[in-house]
Image 1: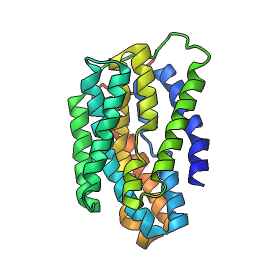
Image 2: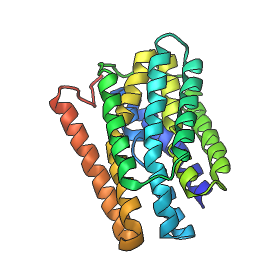
Image 3: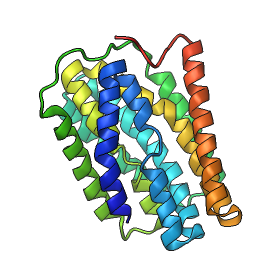
Length: 260
């Protein structure tokens, strides 16, 4: 069920984020793929298949995985200044793996993990400056969108197969691997340059506050509150946090949606 869900949603989400990026610029693509549109449904299925305690523990791993996404994005930021998209993507993926290894060396607790994640997201947004990057007005070749969808789906297949028998914490840590962020940043880097790739990842970082709130609720309340109330509240927190982040970015004259 988990594999079927991710295979069904992956090409749809990558296509939607790509088309939105073509209309409003790379930062919008990043903001959209930052939502837990795959990890959220996977968390629900884990709760249905393995119980609330398993899904709650996995949610703590999901939360820590957001800090690994920050490690990924920072590695891409610093390497893309000098190297190609291929080297940047490989080193960023290695940074995610290294961060995952470190977190998996400990028994994670919900609140300390949440605090670490929020601080790391804030530092990332502070380090990576805002830049105005217009949407790519060049006409993409016909193979461009299908290629993105296929590459992202292959990423998901590989990760799902690797995570199936790893237990709740490590499965949770691996699940947030930025499949969409990797694919879209590579294409943005290739077509528009390193700055476009970083603004995409910065947009993704902006939406991670909402994801952190989502998994804080799931990790803390699922065993006692029950499945439906917990996930409804988690979704509400996620959208509220992302709406607030979007509003604050506009107040700071860093509008997310830019006209072409």
